[in-house]
Image (cartoon, rainbow, N blue to C red):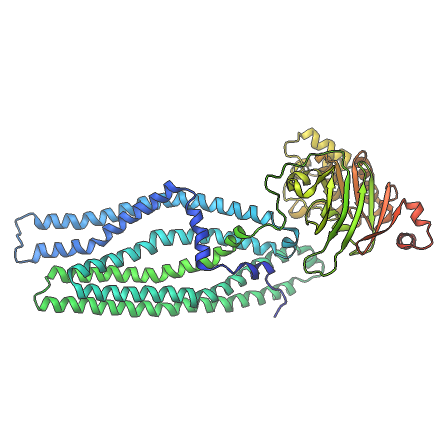
Length: 596
């Protein structure tokens, strides 16, 4: 079996009970009380009319076949009008109920999906690193349609089914006591067994097959997003085989789920047959003894046909609701999951200043680690200084940047920017004052103009072009077929690495943030492109506080200060020539390797 497993999130979120999940759905129903009351009211009226259809059928038979029947009178016509009128009312009220449910559910689905998207966006960087994007997409879209299934099935199907079956049983109880007792007993046993089987027999297996379904979505997204690697290694057949294996794992678990649905139908068959035999037998016996009329027998037969139909629907509806609850619980879990990094209550916006950064006795430990990476870490970066961070992998450089952005919270001490503790201000406003150019820029499948303007959506066309000029991107953009309106493809695949970097730098320029961070911005570029990007970096960092992470020392020769990290500590600091001239030391060793 392949080692592709569903993300950790899938294993941790599926802990909600049916009741917890149903409470989440009920919160969606409360969004639009007027439309919701329309659904409930018209459904109730349709159900009430439906209960009296068999009664009207019995009255019609008595009117045309009873001892007092009068072919010339009007009683049978009135009975017929009552029978037809009830059927008309049932359908009219159902039509009104559905016309309320359509705008009600579609609006709630849009709101619920938007909130799920918003929740996921605010989860931590670690959560996203450990979660397959394709699985998340699958869960949100599956949950959206599950809401529709639950709402339509419950209010337009399941609740009316129960109401009609119970209503007919109660009518029988008051008019034919033992017939009513029998009908209500069979109905109650059938409903109880159906719910128990759905909860304890179908649900556990359904959750497993849903997990495999999410795996399948994650696998598709994973392979397609990495299609360049697939093609470069000629691995299409290997990926086909891997996906085929996952698809058949899904098939195995889904087949088990579907067979459990089929098995529950046996309960439905037994209940329907028992109801048919019991109702017909009891009423015919009462007719033979003179305790029931022909109309009563017709009522029983009509009631049975209705109850049998609703029993079949009830079994399917319980299973559909259970399936919907299983499929929506991921979104419900997202709604109940707290973001790891939260704004303090009433946190004010960050007030941008000149860009001074202070680490004050900071301690930080990654989740799952026993030993702190940073311990009593203290550092001040004055406003306007260009600082380079170097050191071996895992030494704490990238963590430094993430703490500045407050992607993690410190365990002790404080990080202050322009005198403001980053934990006391709004995260969004803080990050808008820090422009990041990563090693692999995240571009959206939108136009180049939109990607640059992402930093400041209200920027004018001229401002976007000026930012591109300063980033040395304008010339290559103008050579593209549609210029600034060229779509860059998913994650910017239509552009080269250097072009993506320059678009990302233009975006940082447009942000006009007091702090700029370049995280390995030139590590994957050729020498000529690196020179262009370095020139752009030198231009855009003028007068800004700049943090540059680099392995290629050519990128940081002009830094005001170089900080050498090792195991979460700064072991050396100074300028390039000073540090490279030392006979020993981490930086001297790195400089020697770069020169060699």
